[in-house]
Amino acid sequence: MRSVVITGASTGIGWATAKLLLDRGFLVFGSVRKQVDADRLRREFGTNFTPLLFDVTDEAAVLAAAREVRAALGDETLTGLVNNAGIGVAGPVLELAADEFRRQMEVNVIGPIIATQAFGPLLGSDPSLKGPRGRIVMISSVAGKSGNPLMAGYSASKHAVEGLSESLRREMMLFGIDVVIVAPGAVKTPIWSKAEEVDICSYKNSPFFPPLQRIRKFMLQLGESGLPPEKIAEVIAHALTSASPKVRYQITPDPMRHLMTTVLPKRMVDRIIGKRLGLMPPA
Image (cartoon, rainbow, N blue to C red; front, side, top):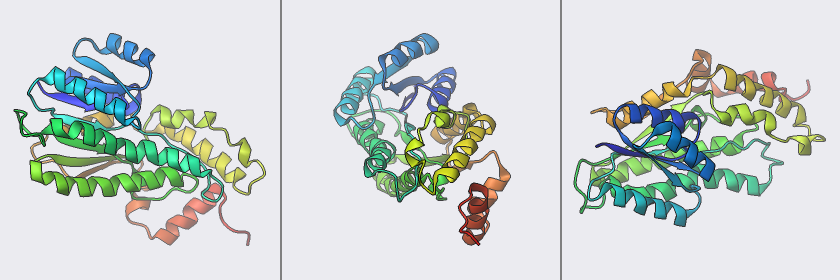
């Protein structure tokens, strides 16, 4: 039976991917941080789903989960690892606390490194295992190729994921393990719908406060108009199973967004975003 480990499986892209792969006959191991989510997913997904209780930044817990997966698979290889878990931290570079930057990078960059080191041997770098070599899918973002103002920590983390993935793909050629990037635009997931809960009161006396209010409203709109996570799950499934996957899949619901990130001159994009968010200097 084909098998996959998905980090951040409790909601959004991770949940949708787990459901789709289970429907296609996979054995799915999904990471969650809370026991209540582990119990809920067991009820929702049934016996072919195994929750793994860990935070991706907790190396000891991730290694323990890898041992659990190894025991469940016996001497067979793991088909795939989907590095999906992530967070979004908002705030201007000049004023966002360094600890918040660290938290953003710990979860979105160090987390996938820890997971890859823990589960990578199960994909086939361990020669004692039998079966076809597995594949790693790294969940990036359109922000991995474009820097969003007031979301510098998130953009920096996804740029890092892009570079990490390319280096890793070339390293893992040694074992026949492929690495594929999936880079969604806005998706209807809690990472956007929780924007209203972000406390920006500490910036009340900052010149960035009005733009922060605008970008929070914009994020809420993205949460309503973004792609359904099931659409991203389909691409992840393709990346895991296609005989000849691309190295990177970018999925955007808005053609204009794709145009802005790939075609228009950067200075022009600066002005468009600056006017939209109120970041242009006084005339």
